[in-house]
Amino acid sequence: MRTVVPQSPVGALSPARRRCVGTGRINLSLRQGYGEALAVTQRDIGFELVRGHGMFSDDMGIYREYEWEGLGSRPL
View 1: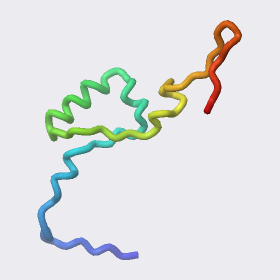
View 2 (view 1 turned 90 degrees about the horizontal axis):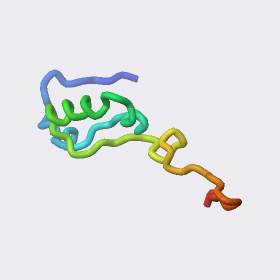
View 3 (view 1 turned 90 degrees about the vertical axis):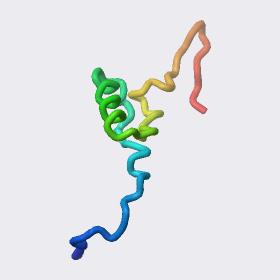
């Protein structure tokens, strides 16, 4: 496979790239210092949204089965 890249711009870059940033796994947002780093990035490029993977993964603790007085939760 061969990729050819033009030496000069072929058009304006869409501002959409500044609207959303990716964080990888969303559980990274639970780490100390993440908020400060995100604030610096937001200040510098002015994004509106953060995209992450695994919001409903076990490490986020969104859903936990439990038992209380003989009753418990069940998965759907």
